[in-house]
Structures are given as C-alpha cells and as structure tokens.
Image (tube, rainbow, N blue to C red; front, side):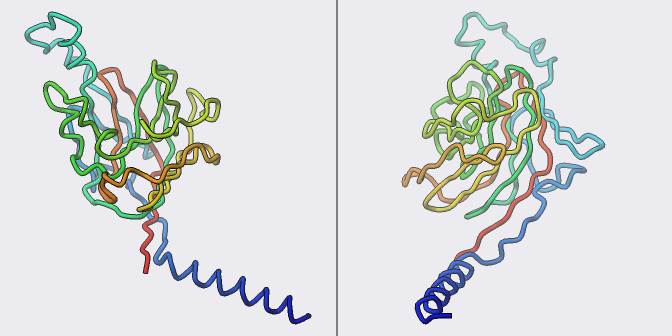
Length: 233
C-alpha cells in the first residue's frame, strides 16, 4: 500500500471516530409499549385506545355533537367546535432524537406529529381554540394528510417546508421518520427525504412529542413508535 493511500485511510478513520464520538448513546427504544398509554397523556377530548395487535387508535366521540349547547349560530361558532384539536403527548421531553413510526389516516384525514411544543397544545384544545397558538405555530408539526382540503402534503414541516406529492401511500400504512436536532429538522416518508429545515431560532429546541387529532372527524392509527435519543459531547 503506498503512502498516499495509507494517509487517506488514516484520515477517513479519524473522521469516522470523531463522528462516532459526537453522537453518544444512540439506541432505539420503544416510545409506545403497545399495551396502554403509560408514558403518555391525552390533551383535549380525544379517545385513545390500543388494539390487541398493539396499534394505537385515536378518534373523537360522535356524541359530542349532541352535547353542543347552545347550538352554533354561525360558521365561526361551528368552527370553534369542529376544528378544536385533540392530542396525545409524551410525558417526557426530548432534545436531539430520531423518531420512527407508522401511521394510517382515514380518507380525508388530517393529523400530525408535534415536536418541541412547550405548550403541550393547551391553546389548540381550549374553548374556543386559539388558532394562532397551535403546536404548528409555537413548536413544529410534521403534517399527515390523506386528501384533506389543504395544500400541505404528508411529511411537510407545517408552515415551513412543503413535502412533494405522491410519496404517501393513501389509505395504507406509511413510515414516517423525523430527525430532530438543534440546528435542523429532517423528515423522511417511506424512506424518501421529503422536507428539511434549520428551524426557527425563536422556537424551542426541546419538548415533548405529540400525536394529533386535527378535528372532530379525525380517525388515526399509529404503530411501531420508536425513538433514538442522540447525546452530543
């Protein structure tokens, strides 16, 4: 082996060692145990249940429509009920991490995964909700959209970067991966990089992870939620 090749090999090895030392303790662990809501807390009026195969199901109670009193007199009052969100949040907060999960959204469904939301969606579930203080506006929301009537496809970093169309498998299970670092957010959908952004320096760098029910007609399923925390020296 000539001297230049030896030097190149040593240099590459050194870079790999530095990289490895920069991210410590990166082990994948289950974020959801597939049995109950241990480690999670509902925010709002969502109904969260776990199926026998470990799938997490989120939906709303249809009886809430019958409980509307007084009945909405205009669209604004109806929207305050219809678009009042519900969330399921981790009790733990996270800094740098990789998150991997699978999701299924009903036809016309709208959902998302919240990161770095210090408010834990309290403004989105209030009566009436404050639509200027939802998790997408104070933290970050990674969009899930199965032909819902807005132009932010699944995988978008909502209000920052739009993901391309055609990557999601509508009406099927999809794999969502989120890489959250202090200086960047990357999103992969079904193995493809679909969104990347450095983040807003005015927004938090850490926070809980949340699963969204966007409106009163939401039905969502999640499974195989795994997280890898990244600790930097």
